[in-house]
Length: 309
Image (cartoon, rainbow, N blue to C red; front, side, top):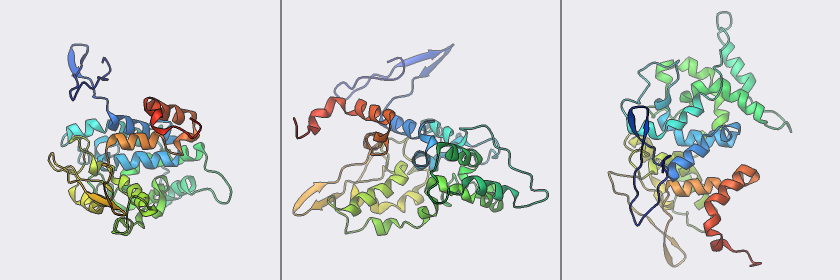
């Protein structure tokens, strides 16, 4: 209880108050959302391209909560959205994981910064593997300008504040969040009437919907729908795979069909996101990932018994 873990007792949980010096502070509520975002934005996760993209997808609408020293106070939204920013505090790891990178001077070459970023962030060619060192070097030069990569309609996009030329110098950083392919996906092409829970388009649609997961969170502090309604509404077709917007306490369930049987599409929530991430094939390639998945699943292994049992 001292660190915010409470038992679920028939629908009620007991909040725990902890103290730090003379100030009373409510211990942060530990839940599946917090578990998922802390795992996605952990130092270990941020050593991989997949981890950086996962963290970015969760944090992209809240980058204004963790603005860097180089950005003006006009970009900081923590006073406007205190509860939301407090919930997404771990996103700071995405923009301040390394020692501050000092860009080269542009006094003699106006393209010096762009060249330097390109040199570090152009993907290795041929059979040369992408190493943790390569990921770390690219992330270091890009972390303070991750806001340049945010969707142009988001309040977390800093192009207007920094200027188009400066953000263009960091265009190669997009490799950290999926590259140019990120802009070629159309949600309406992926999530359409052909989607059902038995086919590949269903999986493709859900994966794309997760790239804007904050739009579908049901806790007000976790949801970015009120902050970025227009951006979220672009993904309204995610209803087809069970993703619904949180609208002032109400969500609209969507019914999908499987052959002749009516089936309620699984509701996307933070718990599902956390356990899918923990037990994903990529996660299970590491000891930490296997342990994380096991910890979540150990009480339910009887649900997935093997043929040998």
